[in-house]
Image (tube, rainbow over all chains, first blue to last red; front, side):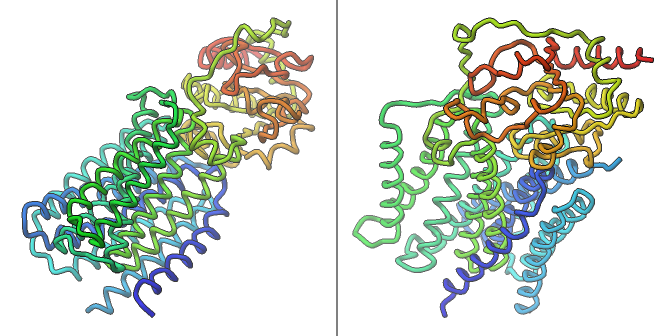
Length: 92
Length: 460
């Protein structure tokens, strides 16, 4: 079985797991869910590190910095703003 | 070494799922978010260990720059501005995925060829590019930098279709299947993907932007997954799939709340500034009330449900509303809040705005939870909401027929706090306003609410 097929299995099963978990999130938490999931999509930072770390020419370097900066905004901003929101949810 | 790194990625993937699972309750949600952040940290650390880092300069510059901007934005953003915040973060996530795919393509010198790598690079560039530029347009519309009105011209869907076709063609050409220079085709792919992102979002009205943001959220996940296929990394594939699923579920929920199909949102060019058909609505008598009357109606009953709409947040009246709730509870009134799925500017937005005003979350009820209670409710206070409480939704043939509404007209008394009788987003009259049981409390939500606080304090 090729890498593509293994990747496809993983993708489909992860999406199904995601559906199971996320449909049970109550509407009251849908905004933090969206911003938290958004922070998780910043996982592209892993790819960005690979690109930036092996950069040799100027083009690769610029692309690497751009990818890291954008992914970091996504990760840091996403988790922090989600935490800020969730901290406001208090029970009586 | 490599096995250890892969195990770290596996651990991170598990923590992402567990973190999301903890979002199922407000009591565990904050810990869940922290777990997901920990998972991200593990994934990043493992990558740094595994990668032959030739140059730390780029990584450090990128992290300091991105971290600073992200942290500043997260700390200073107003809660009312959350939709555009999520929108722009999405754009950066999609952009990062696109750049990873681009760098990978250029790394091969443009000779990726017809292979798994080539195909996923094209896909990653396409999805990432569309997410990037589309998110910026969505941000501009929500932030008021661009007009919220749909920008349309005849044959637009046809043009967008052509554009999409051109993107696909350039993607295929970039794989070097013809004599066309793959590199040139790839640059065309990047440019066309960015243009496509812009052109599919401009015809969508500002009021529909939250659906677009949810959908782009899903795309940013798919873009991350595509990047994962490109560099053969499972944690990217898994977390991308989780985000893709989450964005899609929220998009569907949002469409259901507005009683529209996703196709109608995407191609309907709907949702501009509400067209006030003022001439069409006949003048009919309503019962007016002042703050003193409303205080008496609310202060001497057993149960009150508050229905907040976005007008409340626009007027920044949520803090005064919480004071009203507190005063009523001190008087022994049972106070609940009924929240419509599209009460705010994104799913769950109103809940965040009320949480910010210290309304306890166990007092907030969604549509399904609260609708059966209205029959036993003494009074409903509707603030800055209109279409979501319009009984016309239950009648066939109405413009909003079938839209899920809060059945406030089943309560014994309803009080509508609103600036005027003007129709809501759907542009139709609201029968509720003219009902015998309804009182209209005209005025700015914040001022009216402050008056109400004063009057409630006067009550014996």
